Length: 187
Image (cartoon, rainbow, N blue to C red; front, side, top):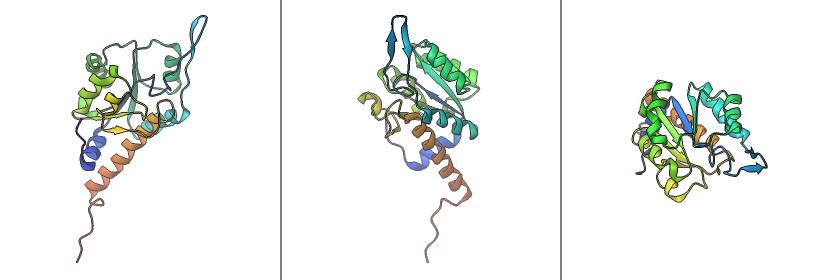
């Protein structure tokens, strides 16, 4: 994906109304603990939870899109009051139309963070007019296909960093609109 200038990124951020995230490898470190009955637990970062809250305070809704049908993910979504949790989705790009309808947003009002090859198609779709990101430890082809690669790894604050980036870009866009972002004229 081509690199966009700061003004374009800020303009895109100013329109974001929904931030979607993959789960394993973004909100978790990609590891899963198994016991005799199957999946026992996943580790989530509380920093990412604060990212969800900060986006909500800015009027931005969050959602999860994952291949997994995990009780742990469902509970985490419930705890964070995530309005749109799509579990068991194998073709995320194909499911995007339903997500847009459910959230009542346009494609250019969406941001997405993913980490692996199963995220590439939805990242490409959203990246045309929205914002995209990947954690620091994302699969290389994914890292090369997004607008931003976080410094944080998956499960260690990558989502929070993406959320803060969007919020900072929105401030930049607001300053530009009000004229505060323009350099002073020199005599």
